Image (cartoon, rainbow, N blue to C red; front, side, top):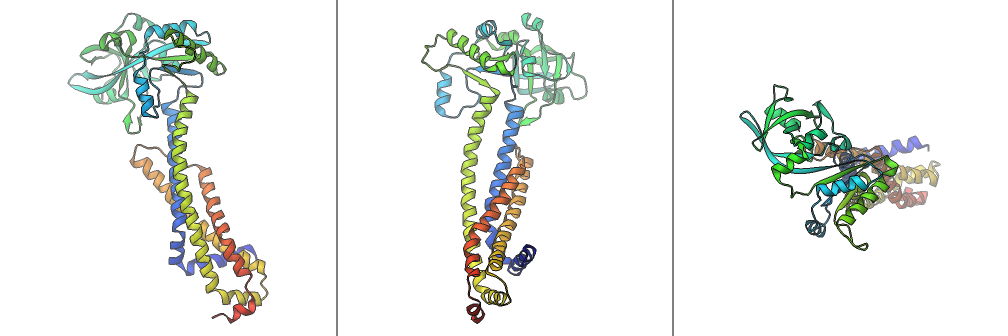
Length: 406
């Protein structure tokens, strides 16, 4: 018997017992569906976070009072006890970081923006030094960035995001217009590119003003965030080490004490995020694996029932010249085909769930080819592994005894 014939017989058996086949597949379908859906959502989150959240660039580091990602209540409590970072800290890093090409800082607050009778609340008002735009790669649709002259003279100028454009300037070019930020007049000098949303929160409701003016409006007691750009990707480690030494010296930290600030790069921020997503993935995969094993056991039980039901058929095939190897292959192919069909259904359902999650929730999803391939291999492997015992039992049947079976 050739392999094609074995597949045909296996599929015919599945069609003949549709309800039993569906119930048999349930465990494998659930397991594969869970794996595909979870892998797709986590992969989408990883890609999204890498591209939009932690996209500092390979040669940029940041220093902040609090960690960008807080993983425990102890970390949060510890970060609240830390000193604020100041412009003097930034100036010291700029002076002594010899492997840095530029150093700047950002400070954030929320405020109200108004133009005419229309206004927006909860807008992120960001104070920039002149270097930050180039360090972070700020892109503009029109206008210009905040310059050193703007910062030195605390000029009333601002760059705005598209939420402000859409709501306050729907039919006019905002560049050159006067916008009120917390009732202070600002000339709009630029419009940032549209960024979209992250996890359901708009990333376009912001305005950038000079750092010096921000501190006049919101006070100078807010902690700033320092950004540094190394002289090339290969010198990022040395540049960040120099910045760390400067900060430790300014904060008078003993050599054996922990940093009272957080220094991050694109790589270590992503490493923290991957650890979080890896833990979630491991737990979900373990649950899905249990479902696959249960599905495999069900496949084995159903195949044993099938062997018992088809004992006479096996006897006829053996009496007609079929070898034990042919019977073994027939039942192995049948169990593998049963599991593979379950795997394919699970892949389709998992893909549908991932697309639905991406469409109807803020969570992104990305279906990976290796996850689909893994699901196919895993489901087929489950069928082969748990089909060995029933197949061997069928192959060892004595043809005379099998022909007598009623």
